[in-house]
Length: 287
Image (tube, rainbow, N blue to C red; front, side, top):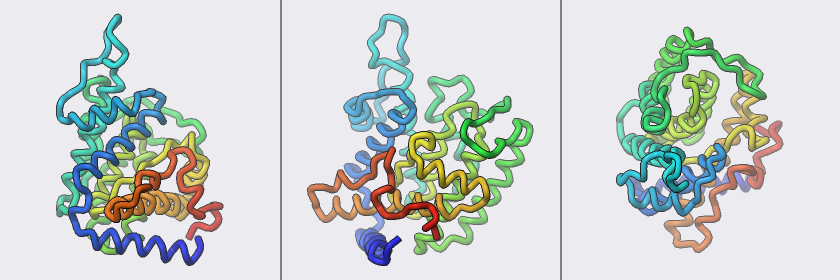
């Protein structure tokens, strides 16, 4: 990372703080939510139209149509219901913004239930069978181990929140990155782990009044995939560096919005090429 880039990122972080605690107004929040849900839908292959997501977010908490039955229009589909669930989950983590509320592991199954409660019978319940993940050099916990793993995770979450300096963005990013990896590594649910993990870990950013980051799907982003391989060897520096790039792109967008720059919407990274234009890689440059 070049010195000029470090200085620029620090300036943007300071500029965000100067905007005050209520910088994320309803319009900006909903824009983040539309982008977040649209990207998640594309990454999972659900092919929802962005206009459908915009309408859903605008009309929230009004619910969309029920899941499709044979002969009903395509717009009445379970993926739209899941998108509504993601919006509900994103609103839930907003409760942590500027709050002294402690993020506990109980939030994880609650968010899973919010997202998938209407479309997945096992929503909110820990998996009861073993799974093997493609392209991962680690074994996820066996079902009988998940409860104890999550208990340790919960203790770690609370310990980190006691230690973190709310004004130290480097510490916050480190907390966020490690929490994401722990969630992915545990793989607590039968399905929907990625979408749940992305929202769960963004609760950490919102707790410290930082904007959301839109996390790409591992299989579609080589930088994300490579950083997780390093994390498997307990080297979290690359994934921390990667998430730093995503976070500061979000900060840049927020600052540009408040400075009334016409291109503010262009500053969120593409979910496939995320961070590649920021000079944060190759991965050996992680620090």
